[in-house]
Length: 73
Image (cartoon, rainbow, N blue to C red; front, side, top):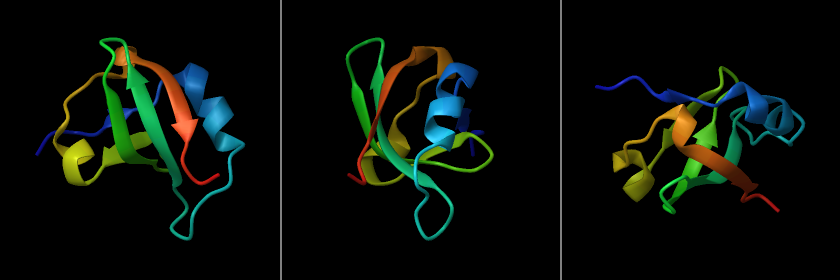
């Protein structure tokens, strides 16, 4: 099993201000440099990004992330 991708520092501060779900995670979608949108994913309190369903099968690096969007609004 691969290690989860860690959210880049420049996004971690923004996400930390978002409300957490019942499990302490932040629900989001990611926009990657190549134009892919990955979601749904959870950003855990550790900063690890974990996807499920289709998003759980995607492979990407932290440097690939160019934007993030909350999905709990």
